Length: 70
Image (tube, rainbow, N blue to C red; front, side, top):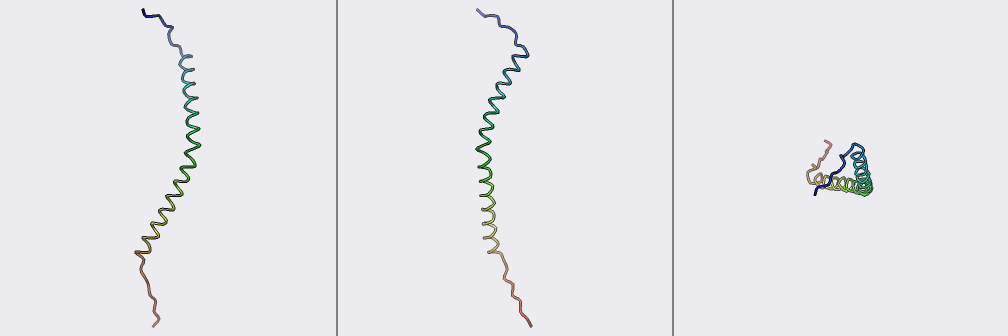
């Protein structure tokens, strides 16, 4: 019923791990090529948003200073 299998050797494990590593490397490189431009665009958008919010809050809170000569 049960067939005998050869014991798993170190070479078998290493070859399988290399196959898995190659696949993971391919997936990460393709994901990286899409994520970098998206991250840059998101960072620029965040900085622009913070600038606009800060500008609005600053105009509401800024004091008007009058200087008069006596």
